[in-house]
Image 1 (spheres, rainbow, N blue to C red):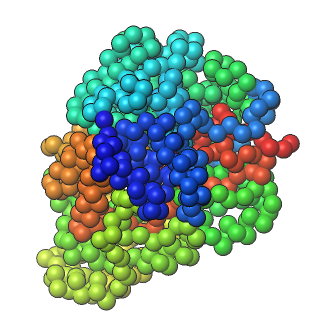
Image 2 (image 1 turned 90 degrees about the vertical axis):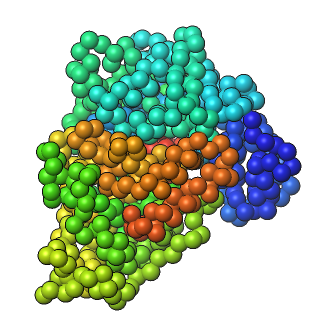
Image 3 (image 1 turned 180 degrees about the vertical axis):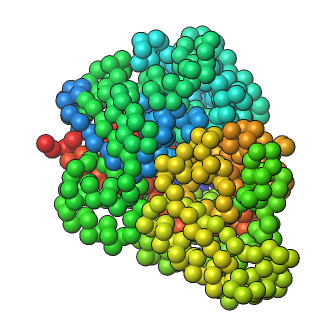
Length: 625
C-alpha cells in the first residue's frame, strides 16, 4: 500500500498540491498511480478547495469523486435514437475497426464507437468503471497493496451485440490473443507486464503482474489499449477468417455497431440494440465520413454546418478564426501531451535485407552520425512553426515528453541556427561538394515524409529551407493520411515500414503514467519491439532506434511503484532521447483541437489525451433542434 506517513510519497504529493506546485489533475493522476483510493483522493481535493478556493491554474476538469461517471448532461428525459443522425467528418479516414492491430488514431477513433474497455479516463485522469462494477483500489480490496495484482468485477448485465454474455473468459482471451505472435498485435508491449489472467468465476477476472507496477491500470483502461475482444467470435476453428471479418464489423458491447464500412472512405453505425442503457444512445445513426483535408473538415462544421463534429482540425489559426465567424460551430482546444515531432530513421531505408528495407541490423548512411542529427535539430524554427501554424495553447517544445508537469524535463532547450548546423557538419567532415554536403561518397540527400495537410506542408517548407542552407538535399514526400497511418503489413507507405529518412506526425501519452508512450523508442531483447517483417511491422519502435541505456531505464520504470521515482526515470529517458537526437520535438500540441456544432453539448465530449474524441458518444446529445 502507498506509504501515507508524514514523509511518505502521498504526503509529499499532498504538500505539492497545497503549495500550488501541481494542480488537481496532476494530483489525481499521481495519487491513483500510488494506489490511493478515490475516496481519499476526493476527500483531499474537496478539503483543499474549501481551504484555499479554486486556484487560477486548476481548470483541468472535475475533481475525482467516489462514484465518478462519464459526463451525461442533457441526456435526462431523452429516449433512445430520438436525435436522428450524427454526422462526423474525419479527414484521416479509418481503415479498420479492430484497435489491437491498428497503428493510427483514425482507426482507434472508429473503434471506440463500438468496442469498450474495462475502464475509461475522465479528463483529469480519474478512472471510471465501464464494463466493471467499480474501479479497483487498495481500500476496496480489489487492488493488491503491493500493486502486484488487480481483480476486476464485471457487470452482470452486459451482453455482446450478438446477444452472448460478457464474461471473465473474454478478458482472459483478449490478453491471450494480444500476446499471440500470430496476431501481430500492437498492444503486446503494453500487455507484456501481465504474468497471468485467470477467470475466478463468470464475472471475476484476476490479473497478476510479472512485477508490481504503478501502471497496473494501463492494459485495461482507455480507448487505446483497454478494449475487450469476444472469445466466442475469435476463438474459433477458422480464426484467420474471423479476425479478417472483425477488422470491419466487430461484435461489441458499445452503443453502436458498424452497419456499412468502406475502408478509407466512410463508416455508418446504427444502434446496438443490446446496449445496456435503455434510453441511450440519443442518436439513431452515426455517419462518419473520411477523407479530404483538415481545412475542409473544419469548414464543414464551422461555416456550412453540414457536419456536427470535425476531429483534429490541424489548420493555421488565422484561417480557423475566419471560419469560426460562420456561426455554425465553434472550436475547442483541449490541452494535452501531444507532440508534433520529426522521427529519424536509424536503419538504412534504401538497403534491402531478406525482403525488407530499413532492416534493424543496418545503419543509416548519414543519420548514424550524431552531428548530422544535431544539424537537423538546429534546422527547426519551433517558435515560427508554433506561432504561425498552431497558435495559442500549442507552444514550441524541446521535450518529447511534454504536458505532464512532474515528468517534463527542465534540462533541455532548443535553438534554431543554420550557421551552427553548418559548422557542425563541416567539423564532422561533411563538406560542400557543389550544392550538397558529402563524406566518403555519401551525400546528405534525404527524404522527408508526412501526411497531406497544409500545416504540415508549411512546416516541411520551413525546415527544408534551413536544411538546404546547411547543405542538405531534401525531397519532400506527402502521403494521404489514410495510407500513412494504415498499419497493414503490405503497405510500404506507412509509418511502420518507414521507408524514408525522416517523417513527421503527432503522438501523445495515452495514460497518466506514460510507459506505453515511451515504448516507441524501446528496442527490447533482440530488437523484438522494432518494426520488422518478422512481426508484420507492428513493433512499436518504427525508427529502429536501439539504445541499451534507454532500454534499461524503460525496463526499470515498468517495475517502479514509487511515482516520484518513476517521474525521475521518465525525465532521464526523455533526456537520453533529446541528447542523442533520437527525435526532434517541435510543438506541444493540444490533445485535440476540434470543431463542434453549436447544437451539440460540448461538455459531454470530455476530450483528453487519455481518450479518443468519440469515447463518450453514448452521452452525446443536442442542446437545441
